[in-house]
Image (cartoon, rainbow, N blue to C red):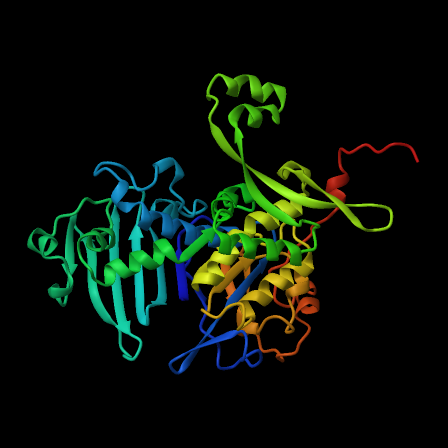
Length: 438
C-alpha cells in the first residue's frame, strides 16, 4: 500500500515535490468506499493527476517508474557500469546547478502490516546516499535499518542493529559505487530489505507509456489462465464492444507473416523459421435480419478499434492489481477510452466487492468529467503546473479552501486551481499563414 512518494531534480521536477495518499482530516466524503482504514489513519484507494500539456504529469509518473527500475536492476550492473548513461541522466536541465546535481527519490508504504520508508540520492554513476526505515504497524516510531552516505569519496554507514543486516556485508562493508545496499541485503538475508524489494518488484506497478503495446504482452500471458480469461472476458463484455470471447490461437510463423504487409514480410522471412507462435483471436456474433444469432465470426486484433485494443491490453494489469491488492500507476489512462469506461474502472477500485484487498490506482488524465465530488474527494485530486522557470510543482485540491461539494470542473476551467494551459495571442499563429479565397 503506497503512502507517499517524493522526488527532486528529475526531468521537469527541480525542487522536491511530495505526493501523499494519506487522507486529509479536513476533507469529508466517500469515507465508506474511497478510504482504507489503517490503525488510526485512513489511506486513499486512488488519486488522479491533472495538468496542462507539458506541465509534468508524465514526468512525475516516470519518476516512480525510474525508482522502481533502478532498484530492480541494481544487481544487474557491472561495477564500472553507469546507473544511467550520462547522456540520458534525467536531472532538471534548465538550471546549470541542477543539471549536474544528484536526483533524490523516496517512497513510504505498508507491506505485510509493516511500515517502510526507503529512498536514495544518486547521479549517473554512483549512489550518494541511501536509507531505509521501518516500523511494525502497531509501533508509532520508525526505526533506522541503515543509512549509507558518500563522504569525501568514501562510504560511511549508520547501522543501529547489525543483527538485522547480513553478516558478510557488516564485516567489510564494501560495495560498488553503482549498487544499492538494499539490493545486496535483499539477496543475502531475510530482512526488511528483502520485503522492500518484494514490494517494489511485485506490487508497485508503473505504466509510463500511453501505448498499450508496452503492457499488452502481460494480458496475452494471462489469457491461458482460466480465472484470468473469465475476468478479462467479463471486463470486455461490460465495455459492450461486441466481443463474445477472446483467446490465443496457435499459428505457424508463416501464417503470422502472411498477415503482415509485403515489405515487412520479406525481411522477416529471412530471420525466423517455421515455428509455432500464438495470435490473439476475438469472437463476434453474426446476426440475421431478424436479429437472431446465426453464426460466429473470428478475427485478429487489427480488426478491432483502437479503444477496444486499449481495453483488452489494460484488462490484464487491472485484474492483476485488484486480485492481489497491488498498486497500479498509469499515465494517460483515459487515452482512447470512453468516459463511461473511465468511471467503471475507477468504480472497481472504490468497490468493496471488486477490490477486497485494497488495491490502489494512481493515474494522470485530461478527462475533466471525473473532476467531480461525485467520484473523488479533494485530497484524491492533484495538479501539476510549471512555474516561470519551467519547473514542475505538484499540489492537491485539498490545499484549497473549498466546500466539499464545489464544482471542481468548472473552477478548474476558470483557472481557480491554476494547472490549465495559458493560450497566448492566436494572431501569432496567423503570421506567415496563407488562406484560400473565401
